[in-house]
Length: 211
Image (cartoon, rainbow, N blue to C red; front, side, top):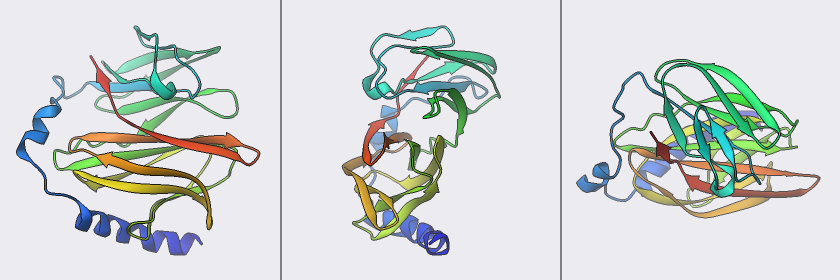
């Protein structure tokens, strides 16, 4: 199965480019360039939680347990959500997510975000008890991301703007559906998949930023 998925992933990118709708010049104005090229961006993902702290920024109501990225200088950064706390050294000009993992820990994982002016980033997080899942785009008949291990993330960059339906799969079994996911230029979408013991769900949300 792994060999087949690796073959399909490039095909997915090509198909996604083909179905992308025309880009408009004003799209770029919706997203500001970061002021400091060495600034880093850190957030928390903890499904079911509404309050989180990233560095010195407190969020009282985070939708879906996904906080905005907080703009920070590089260095040691702490995070807290629920009963979990963690600290990590964040390098310059990078993106990191503190992930409330299924093993009950808060882990810092690196996000490969590009924020390209002509493309959109899609980052997928597997917070389930499944050892491997795939993200499939049925409209183009191809795998977007394959073999995503638990408590890890994977990323793909797509032409934008466009709208795609996605399915989270374990082999040929569809575990969750994500209809009408919108991709925007110089922006990104986060997909969170979670669950255990045969009960699974997924949701998508646009990446947000605060200074």
